[in-house]
Image 1 (cartoon, rainbow, N blue to C red):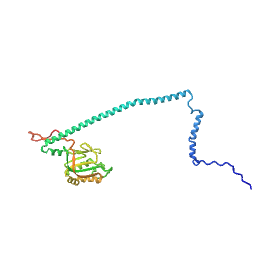
Image 2 (image 1 turned 120 degrees about the vertical axis):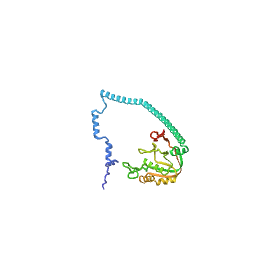
Image 3 (image 1 turned 180 degrees about the horizontal axis):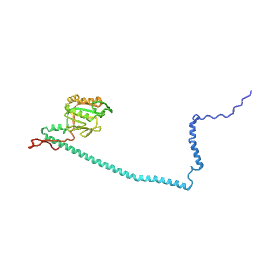
Image 4 (image 1 turned 90 degrees about the horizontal axis):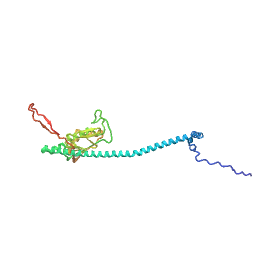
Length: 306
């Protein structure tokens, strides 16, 4: 029985691990495009890719390098020289700002002292010319701080909502939103006066017979002083009676309509004691009858000095 000779042929090499990734293998092995490679090889063969060999070319390259270095050096030197100048100018500007700020603070302090002095003189004048009713005159004019029972009414804008449409504030060309307007505060204050309030203040700003509630853009001004919501209205009077009378009044119903229509937030509470400051400045005016005119027999009324 013949025996088969052993197979001595060379075994096939094992498959490469990246055989299934031929595309990636090709990209890694040929990172440079064939066209670029051919162009580079051609320039190397022509000698055009090598450094300049002639003396003229070398001098030109050296001149370019020297010029570039000179530009960089000059730029750095100019920046180094101008840096102290800029720092000095900045320091002088800061010093001027501090000086002017200090001067403005001093002037503001002087204005406050003068305003307090004028207010005190006006209050004394009211007491002097008011006779036995000096305290009542000072109270009604807002020249003195007051305290007593009353109500606290807080009016605030709606929570980030801008709403439109009909409502108690709708006018031609006016877009109603959830923000409190100056005329809203006017109606609130007038309603409190009508309901029996003896003294009123908004955000610590005392109101008098000469106070004005106006608007400047979106801000509400009381006697030219801007107010920031929420608007806290303090009124001195019989708390329960004042609260009931205001809620039943037309202005109270107006405020309720603003709450229902535009989500304006309101809250009213009766207080055992509220404190209101004196008005910051008063304009005292007096009027005296003139002597009868002997010719016409008529009497004129003239306004005295302030």
